Length: 150
Image (cartoon, rainbow, N blue to C red; front, top):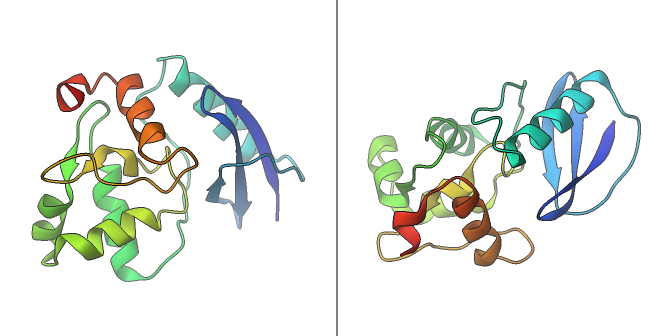
C-alpha cells in the first residue's frame, strides 16, 4: 500500500493510499511508494499548516462501518476554526455522545477529517494523537478557535 511521510509543525505524519483514496494518517514517519495523490495530499497538508488552505480536497476512504462513516461526514462538515460538541453530532445522528466520541477517536484520517474540531460539553474531550489533548489544542489554536480555549 503506498505511503509517504510529511513533516508538520506537530511532527511527522504519514499518509496511506488505497484504491485511489487516502485511507489513513499515522502519527509517525513511514515510507513507501509515493503516488500523485500522496504528493497532492502532502501539498495540501503543507498549505493547511501555512494558513493557505482551510478545506482539504482529496478522495478519502476512512475505515469503519456505517456509523463511523456518518460521524466522519459530520466532522468534515465542521468549518475551519469552528467546533461542534459530541452531543450535537449525536443528536443529528440519533445517537448518544459516547459512541460519537468513540467514532472520533477511531478516525483513521485525523487533521484531514477534523476530529480535533469535536469537543465535549464541559471541555475539550480527548484526542487520540500523540500528545493527546495538547495536540488537539495546537490544531484548534492553529485554526483560530481561541474562544473555546480561553
